[in-house]
Image 1 (cartoon, rainbow, N blue to C red):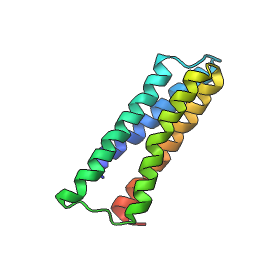
Image 2: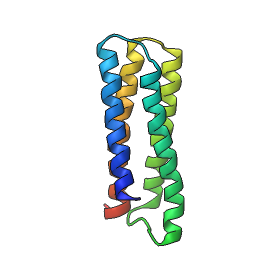
Image 3: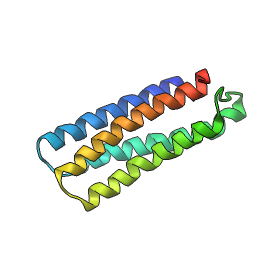
Image 4: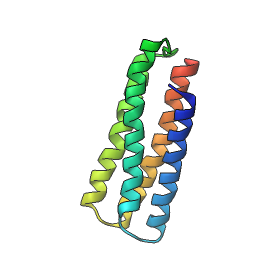
Length: 121
């Protein structure tokens, strides 16, 4: 993993979570801002998948368990997509709350992926 890209992914995930939580607090349904924020998080995770495939070829190997890393990455990638579909079906404010929780979860999972890759713990 690349540290600066990890920081960007965590920051965008947290900002997306705050945006979604604010719209949920306003009792607003999902809109372009909340769904777009989750789409941006999913795109960043897709780029992370590409980085994680290429990195070992350039000598940047994971120090921790590769299986654990890939399971975190795959689940983290699926979660915003699933929450986005949820928000398209359930057009209530609760969908925004689900998107906010997913944003927080992706931030935590991304940090854990970095720990597995860089520290090996």
